[in-house]
Length: 534
Image (cartoon, rainbow, N blue to C red):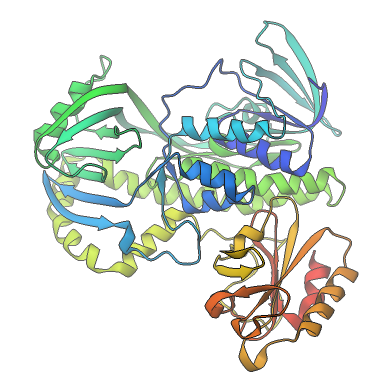
């Protein structure tokens, strides 16, 4: 193994592996280590959200399709209170436009990690298990890390940067002098199990059951279901059994009869809500659970860590290649810290509502909820809004210093927003707009405009030349034409949906970052602003 690398990644969970994938695609030298001897199949992280699929799709549509095939689509959920099923929410009824992946899926963390390891093998990346970062010392030029190896010895490694993806008890974060990890531990203890369910109710759907406690049921692909229980007065003096969950479910919280069998595992755990005060301390960075750890409400944790990696990876590569100054890496904290703090607040409120053990609160909640649930499925706009939050498609960085919107552009999409997706048609046939993106470079998308305002092929070519002449950056250019211009060189925007989404009734441009967010957007006449901005 190399003694000198550009980056050392500490922690080989989903966040660390995603960071490794970003750096591998960029051609950056790195090593990735994890102190665990082997991967645990008993992981609590389960949900994969639409934005995470988009992040992985940048690395290839074929590998993403392989990942999708591993999961169970979470299409339908039944809401229950005090043993009565009140309402069914069907994801198929929720319109989530502007994405190739309008759904969440249940894929265990264990399966996600194994898939990422398999993808990394295509880059000849080897994850070093049973290898622990014992001591980190940073100076002006880099970081010296002492590793304890699986053979029992020690190794000194030198790197320009270290990324800590090593969880709530992060060694990297503890080695930093300017990062605190503020928050607390939830008082409740939880029981979790993966088991087969025999019930009168339909299988293959999720259940959220509230009463004197809470029971969450999530179907898995192997036929089992993930069961999570929180209940007042839970016995913490012994290890939990599957019978404990069954007795609780049969005690008036789950509608109808239920029998549990053949558990793959049963465990208990506590949860925390904490956030790092800074995601960077000099040459040390933290990501995933090392920077933010919160309740599993909404299935946000693993997905947020993967997006941390997508945000940091391309920026670190740009600095290491000398394209950007070291200060460019400050934008990682500026963009992602806001996201982490917002998720901590929102998931904490939701989690407290679902799992509170206060008897007065439980009485009022269980009294009011049945009336609210009667209205909930009828308000599809409200359901869609909630799923937009869960999907992570609405995360944006408009306040960032490295994004911009051209003067005079009043479209709905701004610099710092996620690039929306839609169907296009090219030489390869029909495809999705974001399938054009890759993880390594910026992409300039030239939009022709529609009907009487559309630009000619010559005008689009001149705009491309003007942009490329004004910048030395590596940028890939594509032309997106309105349906009226079918026959010209470029991709056809089917039904002109992308023109509408971006606000391009007239010709315009979108400069998209390697992580799929918009670096700059504006009318075609102001394209030099994008080159200057880049």
